[in-house]
Length: 159
Image 1: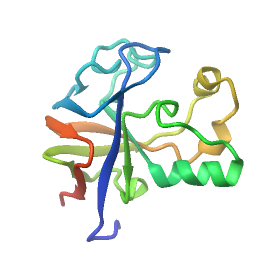
Image 2: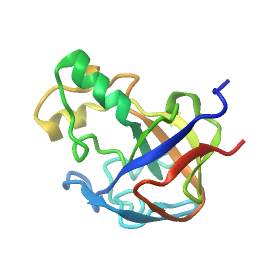
Image 3: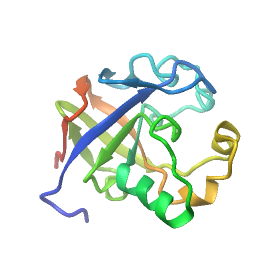
């Protein structure tokens, strides 16, 4: 069971219009229920895994704290535009949100599955981060209620 009373913050927003393209930082974004983030590769169905059906790539999140641990443990700092996740949050227990709903600002997301890294990320970064990110690579979500999000939005449990 996830701890109650937690509250986090949205630190970074990134999208990418097609597979292998560089991630683009945004200050705000529009999320659409059942689709994802406007302008992102999975919203546009141009992502590497777009041909695999399912709601689990609409929005991806990663914890800033996990990125700090990767850098400390493995000496592999991963920049915000490198990890290929859409939203970077802090103070959010992502590992405990599978099957649970939570809000980012006024948008409601549902955790679908823990994200595991793929070897493709090694190719993109031109270094081996696969094992460093194993079990620390974030959460894949679906958008339940869409709307606008922006940097600094509060992230909180819904149920």
